[in-house]
Image 1: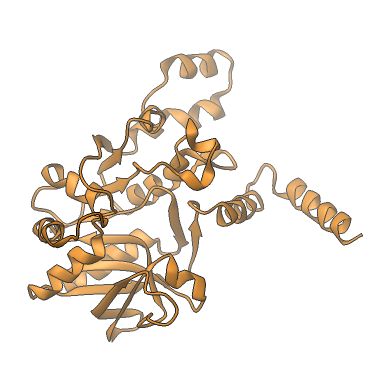
Image 2: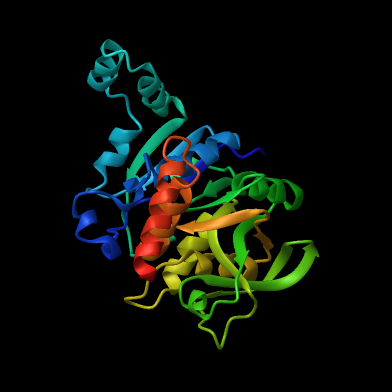
Length: 296
């Protein structure tokens, strides 16, 4: 079965960006002139996704507004002759069919996936976070879908990293290599720490899940100790216990951008500004001037 649906969890508070995120969702933070979540959506659409479920909270209304028409703004741009600006925004609502759910249930990154069960139905689907992405060629989405089509099982998007601090931020996968850059997972640990990381393969961004993930999440929730979060890695370990294979793919030819981290977000803005056709030259000169000032 081909993959045509995706879930974007986007209900978090973004506390690392306070006070900015008191009123603006972190997923709507701009990368020069486009919000982070739009890059995520565009990648999904380019890979053939037509149905996108965004799981939000009460404070995320601006995400819904962004992917809807603003007829007053569109009319203003048309009347003002700003047709290039009009073209930038009028196609955004038509990128895909959008569905919005309010997150309900225990804390944890498996909960928004669980919430989308009725819309997903009995289909494989992608899960992309709304505040990070991997800029790759071919795209992360296409690489994950290609791996799913070959192995017909859940696939985890990974990057190789040797930084000790990453072992406290991400899950890690280890197992048997079945082809270059792809392993059949034998061990999956959430935030293992530098002394217990089973490999250098960090599970950071983007997944394909089969519908078997839903009963596995339910089982993981039953096993969840009181007060602990419901995490997708626990559900995947339930899947593996039940005989389902899980694969991990190191995304090739890509750069990982974590826009949920303040320093990494600022690096991402710089990277995208330096490639922006309208400002890249002037912005580069500005950075060079600032570097000279800081060296004096």
